[in-house]
Image 1: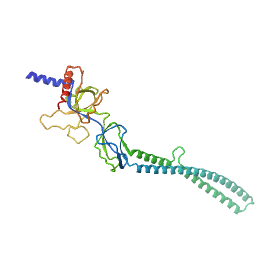
Image 2: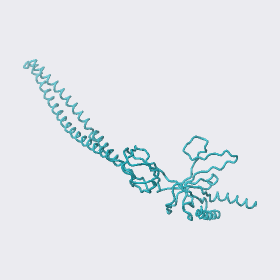
Image 3: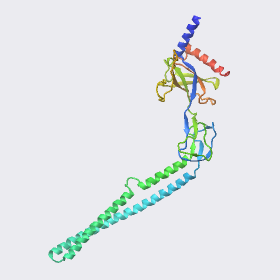
Image 4: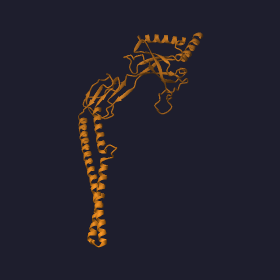
Amino acid sequence: MLVLFVGSLAWHVASDLVAPSTSSGAVSASTTQIAPRAAGQVAEIFVIDNQEVERGQPLFALDPAPFELAVRQAEAAYQQALVGLNASTVNLTAARAQVDQAEANLENARTAAERTRSLFERGTATQAQLEAAELQLSSSQSSLESAQASLESAQLQLGDDNQPNPQVEAARIQLEQAKLNLDFATVVAPADGVITNLQLSVGQFVNAGAPAMTFIDSEQPWVVVDLRENQLANVEVGDPVSLIFDAVPGRTFTGQVRGIAWGIDPGRMAANGLPQNQPSTRWFEPARTIPVQIELAQDEAWPRNVRAGSKTGALIFATDPSNPVALVSRGLQIIQTYLSYLY
């Protein structure tokens, strides 16, 4: 009896170091809350609960009428902005011409004032003629300043020559947003996967960002197993793994370690997003477990009847898979997968 106990203990320690295993793993997959990016009334639903879908497949559609109207309004505003741009261009051309004319008038008035002042000094022009010439010079100067102000205003309204016109650019952005909202009226699957928790009905009004269904990504699932700390002594990322699924009795699958959790929540502090492992109040506290992520090998295909949450067993080859302990563990795992036919 003592020999049997010592042998069993030795086997337990050796297998944990060479080929740690567990039968309490589970399949995991990315889940996403599908929500429309625009608010509206549901017009059509293209899927049913628990239906498999492909990337880009329509899931449901909102009533497009409000979005189409918004597009037409934005197009009209954009065209109006282009008309305003053309008008601004014409105004700028006219303002430049007015400045040129005002500068010519000012030059003529300056010449006339200087000539009248010279004649006045020689006594051949009257005081009234001099005052009239100086008044005309002052009026021409004011006209030039007014024309230059109009030119500056026209340039500001048209915008920088090297930059888009602000009014046209704003109208163009509004038009693009309206077209984008029209595209958002039809919600499509982000990847290959399964729709579940469908919470929609035709005629229902949904807000932007409000979850309407849950999407389970079936393109890249993975397995998560919890190993005791003393089982992780030799486990490294990339170690080969033999997987079994209760849903697929009689078969084993090849995988590899994808990642090992760096920390867990021991349950003594506030929630912090780490996996929780509640401490025990018994005299002999059970060993804590660390989540290990496992992915299937590239040449392995996920069985169709394996779903998120399916029970999984894993045997990790932390050393040479041809090690006698690893070989025996592999044989025991094969027996275990055939027992899945029974329960």
